[in-house]
Length: 411
Image 1 (cartoon, rainbow, N blue to C red):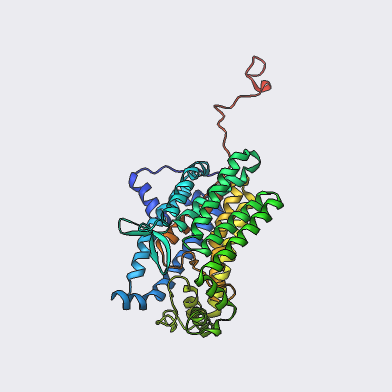
Image 2 (cartoon, rainbow, N blue to C red; image 1 turned 30 degrees about the horizontal axis):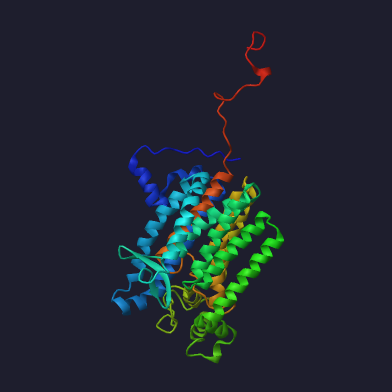
């Protein structure tokens, strides 16, 4: 079993460098193999996403702002903040993060509800999901994801030990969160958060009656949302037959399929996508995979899926080695919001799933999304570090057994 020996930096600026540029951290050599591999796979995923974002966003940024690097430079700034969050998660003991999540969870739910207050929330494309803080837009429904992973793992991992009153309080907080996101309206994120809670509860061993009744309630809420929100209903209908209205509701999916099909086996080449030239809508966020598939083809798509499969396999191995149920649930929640969300985004772009607003982690443009994704990846690496760390007991403070006590016969 690996014993991690943390090395204290000799100079303050070295510790600052580890937070601002964690890929230069020299202490990584003392981490477990799983933690190191997950760390480098995260950076590889992030670097690949930056390359694709540069290509996908350049034409629209040049047309809208006269600067083809507009979105790329802003994404770099968000990644810099996300790296600090990544380092904080990697270097913080899980028990402290779990204690912190108890207070952050209600605060983040409060921010989600604040977006619903007229005049405070920022509305974009008919959805009020953002708050503007010092001219900087933040999306609480994205930033809450790492907090949700921690707190739901803490609740469901200790479920038998919790009193009915405590269980009811946290279930009410979770329901309030999902309901608040649903009212923004943001059905896709609400459904993803709801599914993550349900799957983590199932993995924790909650009763099937409770699970299926909760799932039924969620489906009823989703049906009500689709029935009352006209744009959601049109999305479902266009998914079933996008060619019924190719110039309006089915336009996004048709252009996405054209981009993916145009890539062929090997792709058109980096930067040579044609669909991103104002044919494919929101090509640098929700449909960025379509640009990737057009430029890198089927071969590139398979390699990306292999990257996701490798990431998931390593995470599964970390979960098997974890010594606590709460840690195992953290891994599961992290994989839902990273690999699971990536697969949903790819499914939408390829027409397998109805059109949603879920970004592709580490690929899609968005500050709140990339910060949350890096924080979740940091949680996963932290679990890998603690799962492979042996507990060291100091001999100086350990009580010796009677037969080992120092006596004249046994010095």
